[in-house]
Length: 247
Image 1: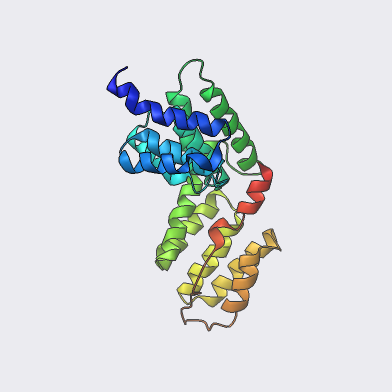
Image 2: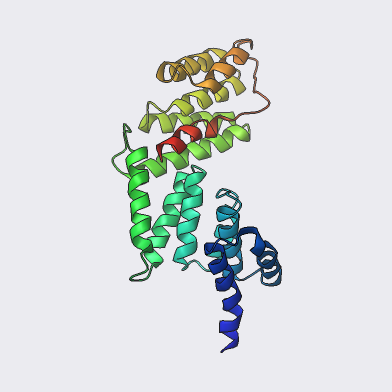
């Protein structure tokens, strides 16, 4: 057999052993291969599979699947696994990007394209339900805008955050998280009245929206014209549990 075949074989053998249920018995070998071949896509893929299957931590496997497809983008199995892990993390944009890549690079008869398309269809049905968006790409574009706005909020660039959250709400006027985050951006600018109004809008849409309930009590104590911002914000993933239940 050729040197190329011999270099690939240990990874395939370890993956087969994982499928046979050997579990943690293969961990030292996978770690050794990853240390020996840090620039080989299969070592990262094998570690991702191990963490996801044996460690029951699909989210923790994401960096390994990402590294595998970074090294070798035309790897449909890794793209599909990345999509599955990103879906578990409720990172819809990353999941759809990976699933679409899995479809693009799949080979005839491997079944990966069909599985990826099925997952895309499921996600599309969930995120577009009761939404104003005509298709998945429109939803993803708005989600990207929200993430940019939230990054501004984290960086305390409140003026730009206000602009971006308002753009999100122009396209998606019932987006509860944007109202909650817009309130925080206004509070950061010292605009108490505007912040309180946004909290009320968020709670009118979802009376049980905990971040707005908590932050409203704090912001209510600020004075108009005196900028205020809480020490920690966690609104981005508030609905993750609900999304998990929908899968």
